[in-house]
Amino acid sequence: MPDGKAPKPAKNAKQATKVNADRPVLLSGGNPQIAKGYGDAPVQAYIAASPGWKRDVTRRLDAIIENTVPGLRKAVKWNSPLYGIADEGMGWFLGIHHLTNYVKVSFFRGAWLIPIPPGASKQKEVRYYDVYEDKLDEAQFADWVRQASQLPGEKM
Image (cartoon, rainbow, N blue to C red; front, side):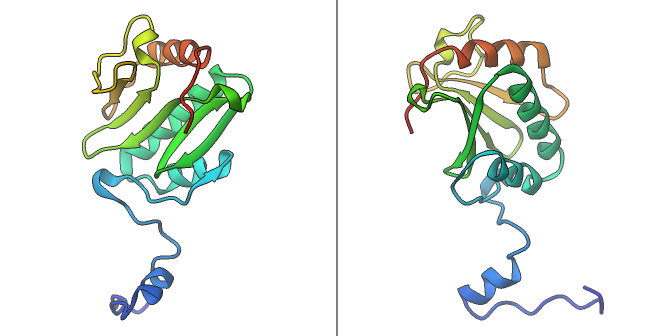
């Protein structure tokens, strides 16, 4: 604050929205609360609102996905970026979500990838790749993205 004083607490939800309108709310694990939207803009808003090292990791993941998949389609749904190919009938092949200590990449047909991503899921075909600060295997991730983008995606 310019005068060094903290803002007064909001008296109601409408005031709280105005006070925090310039910053998205961070949900548990530091996941930004971003309105549902299609295209690159909501994904970039998600990345910009991501806290600390998770912003850098998510920006790098987004760049690798963009460079690997021609005709990429993006959206934010359920406060998570989703990626699919241009043919909407093919669904979404990957999602990203922030948790407390890592960034979780969900491959919706991950059980079909070679090698299979290490994170198991309760869902038979879903596999996870958990990215910790400074622990991104870019070559392996790009290969999984390439493979995943060629498989039938998840309709959401």
